[in-house]
Length: 53
Image (cartoon, rainbow, N blue to C red; front, side, top):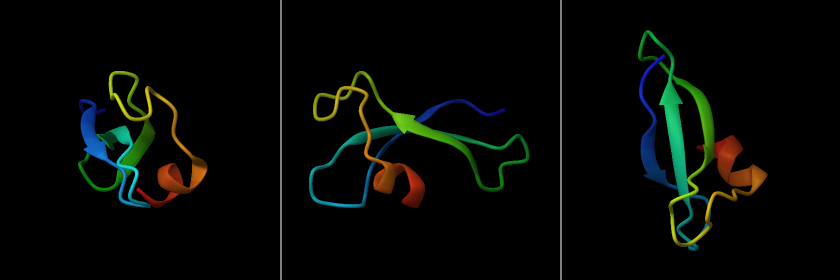
């Protein structure tokens, strides 16, 4: 598995922070979750943002 990479959700204009981790072979995403250290969403993430990231 790769390292967690901080990103910003592009679903709407709120700008929630996400963490994403790619597959070991670097093709595609393995896991996406809310970033607990991000001041906008504090770890929470809507399902639409997680599914579309």
